[in-house]
Image (cartoon, rainbow, N blue to C red):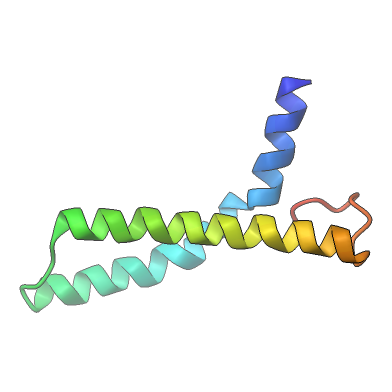
Length: 78
């Protein structure tokens, strides 16, 4: 049961799509580095926060799709 619950949360989070968050942040880091304004600690903090926002957006999307009736629950995580 525990493995199924983990897998459901994993699917709902849609981590393969986190690349849509990673690419612009890496490009921004390269531009900041070239302008001598890159700070590793700040970048890691922004990266972590951005992934958490992306995760929260995916989870809330599934939740509200289910509660509004747009999704019957069989298509968890896209």
